[in-house]
Image 1 (cartoon, rainbow, N blue to C red):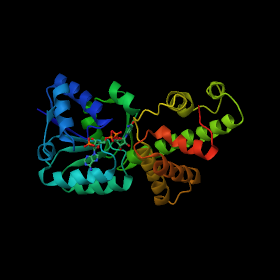
Image 2 (cartoon, helix red, strand yellow):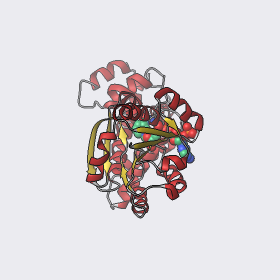
Image 3 (cartoon, rainbow, N blue to C red):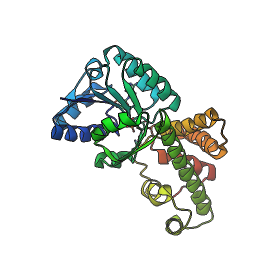
Length: 294
Ligand code: NDP
């Protein structure tokens, strides 16, 4: 029997582990779950037929999934689990982590006979609930093929390169989300000040070349409604854009727009709040323009 373990039952991890449980039931595997706040693991076990477990117990699994805020938290659990890991296991890190951490973690685990794949996801909490996430994987292609059947939460899986490439692609993707979200917010604030109806403006933009996921979905559903539902924290988006800046420096590249947006998102995190939804970053633009985007 293959033992699968999932660590980190947050907004993403909880529904991802639920899909793992459905997959495991169909194939005779078992799923262990661990969460820092242990009660959430117990609740997951009752709801989905998984088993709440200790860090020592999850460390002995054949495939270990993590979905934690940053690579720093992955380091924390990894250091506690290290003595109990089993050679031949694979660690699939679905955190939006740091490429440098991936390189270090992969080397540390390889010394123990454990394979590391960086496998961050996109698609948001809705994609996680529907089991339709896109998974971008860095690391050994053969190791990915071995665990691919267990990626039950995925709608699309792409091997993007060696160790760290998954985290790099995720960071750039989210920096681009930051750029379109921020720039669309600026444009709408200016149009608002000019007295233009923003619903009509978005109607045009979304039938024109300025459209993006921000203009088509995020801003109409979350900003114009003033709901800002907290499904993806502003602090996490700022973290991702910061990783894109680190990546730029690491390759001696030049990406001033990404750097600018990373700085703006960091400022918005401090002013608006790290735990607010990422779309609430536009409240800083509203303050800068003395105009609500509504
Ligand atoms: P949440 O804040 O909802 O969940 C975070 C999880 O990490 C919780 O299980 C939390 O445990 C746990 N955790 C926090 N700190 C520690 C720690 N020091 N040690 C151990 N566990 C810890 O985050 P998300 O699920 O939204 O995000 C998880 C990852 O997925 C992030 O890297 C994020 O960038 C990425 N992501 C998020 C998306 C989204 O739409 N939300 C979309 C795509 C990627 P506890 O319950 O005890 O707090």
